[in-house]
Length: 105
Image 1 (cartoon, helix red, strand yellow):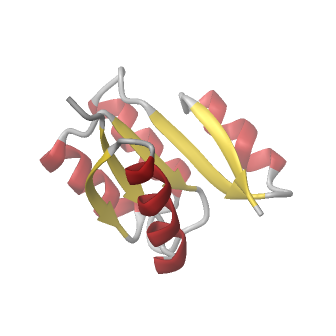
Image 2 (cartoon, rainbow, N blue to C red):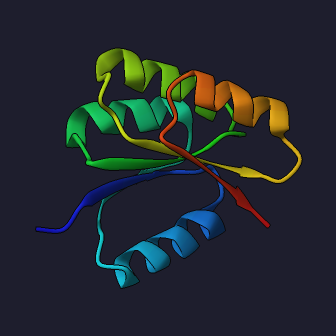
């Protein structure tokens, strides 16, 4: 049974690239969201095994969405993805319970 992933990123290009990479690796894409609010709601609706979460997004950023998801589910696996050079945000994500950090070029 494939691992279900929710992709949360405001960039359509980033979502498309992540979808392609994850599907090629055998993951099932449960859904996509364009901001943290939508990501949180989709997490509640879809109960994915894993979330990829961009940090910098409009409305509700990835750190806030991570906090909401982890409050709802302490066992949630959330991989934070951010542009290089955001060390402070990356450290905050780890403090808030992110499972892993990935920097995008």
